[in-house]
Image (cartoon, rainbow, N blue to C red; front, side, top):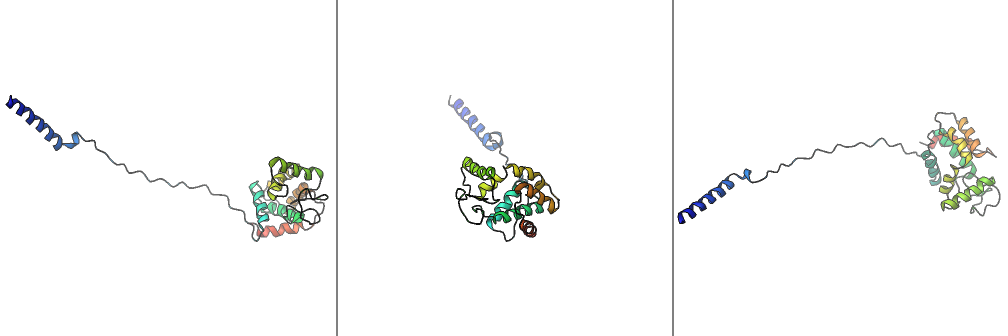
Length: 197
């Protein structure tokens, strides 16, 4: 019996030694796979930023707004900018005659960036400001409102065309603003041609 017990222990010991001698039979092997390098994804070419050398923050804001609305031709942008300079010198809180006041304080004549004069335009600005919770005196409010007006919608297709001569964009400006007084808007437009890039 002792002999059988000893044989059994010897056999168990031999199996254990065999297992230790051949670890590949009892251990799982792990292979590390190197990750492939991530290919660089190139961003699509971003549209160049529109610039206005020497312009005021109000001019830059206005230029960027119209550019973002799809007006890409330099002459078209210059005509829009020249017209606004003629109308208000980019002062959104200016009442006709040059004094700075609130929308409510301007009781006669035009008001704002493009001198909203006729009743439907003046009160339309106030209504738009109220509906959007913005101030009618703010340039942002006025710019947003401009592109909702029927006058702008009539002129916009011309402004969005590229490669037209300045007089075509001047014609679009007349549709848009009515040009009660032509003033120096065309001269200003040509000045903007040299500083818009």
